[in-house]
Image (cartoon, rainbow, N blue to C red):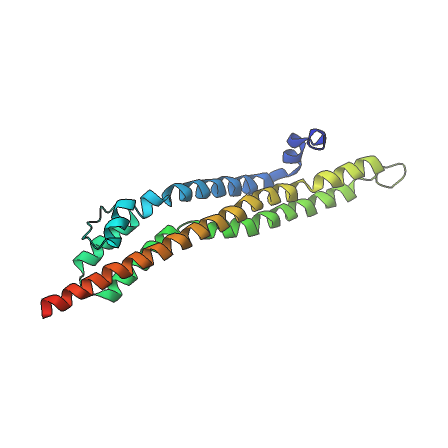
Amino acid sequence: MFFASIDIVRIVREAGLLIYPLGLCSLVATFIIFERLVALRKSAVIPEDLAEAVIEGRAPTGDKRSALGRILNFASRHTGDTEATKAYARLEVIKMERGVSYLDTIYAAAPLIGLIGTVTGLLGAFSVVDPQTRMPDPVQFTESVGYALSATVLGLCIALPALVGSGLLQRVIEKHAAQLDVLLERVLARQADEVKKSAS
């Protein structure tokens, strides 16, 4: 009932030129969320076969298509250089975070862009004066004020999914980073044992 009384077309129209930056924010946020969800799926970051090989102490070979595979390849080429391997693993985590910071900017900026539209809409509503009474027409004034808030509504509707998406992606990245850290420690410990055995 409530949504049936809302004129979506007019809400978009009343947002004026600000609908373009708001629309851009919406498109960018949607793209980042879906692209990162695909890129951060478990098979693309920590394939089960590689993780099992590391846990079982076998010598896995990275396939370079996954984050864990690239880390294993780097570790095998730089045996004994623990700090370099850990630094490379941190770079892989940074790659996983690509684009997520833009979601933080979008959910902060979209409501502010909408607020600009609301303020300009209110200025327009107060400038409409009946020439006979020299007072704003109550019906038109009320309607104008209501639709002046449309830009803010649109900004909030864009900000909320961006906020939720950012939080979700951050949790996924933190989980992957923790798992990579555990697996990397296993690999480095095995390499250290091999170096000791070869030295003795």
